[in-house]
Length: 92
Image 1 (cartoon, rainbow, N blue to C red):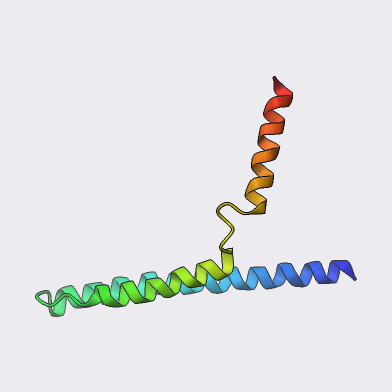
Image 2: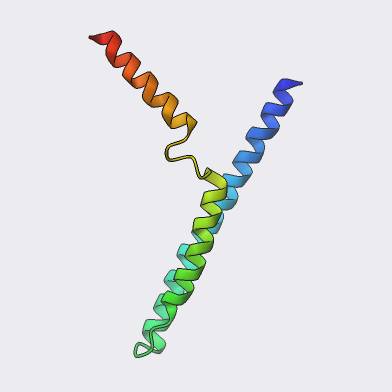
């Protein structure tokens, strides 16, 4: 029973990661194309950055949801640092 729950959580996390990376890939490709179109068709009126900025905010929020707001200094980070210092102390 526990393996099923663990597998489902892992499967959900992988789907979230896949969705984020697909979103990021589309963002990069579309913004490159829009930049080229803007610079070729109307270089005197630069507008592509508006799409890049607002869609970028959406990308940031998507990343925040997928990776978590505590991923930078969250529990996992703390545990790794504690283990690192414990291992370092054992060597001395």
